[in-house]
Image (cartoon, rainbow, N blue to C red; front, side):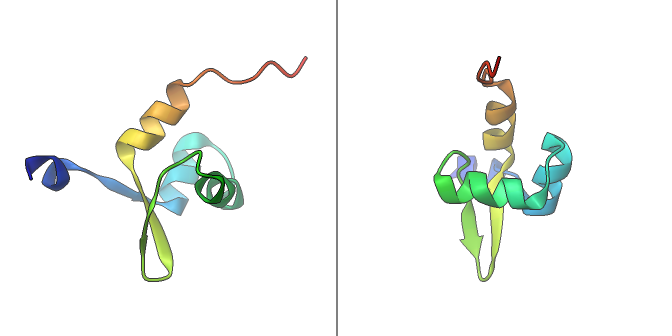
Length: 63
């Protein structure tokens, strides 16, 4: 059970700031399943480890 107590969760606003995107983009990532999140009432919390992992993923070549 120590894994759960060690987990750090971020708000959508904190994730948006870390990823340098809008809050709406974070919501889209959560709803599409690309970014895991836990719902607390009407708000979402994203595990910090999931944000770190998402930032390390290679991005698509748009050129």
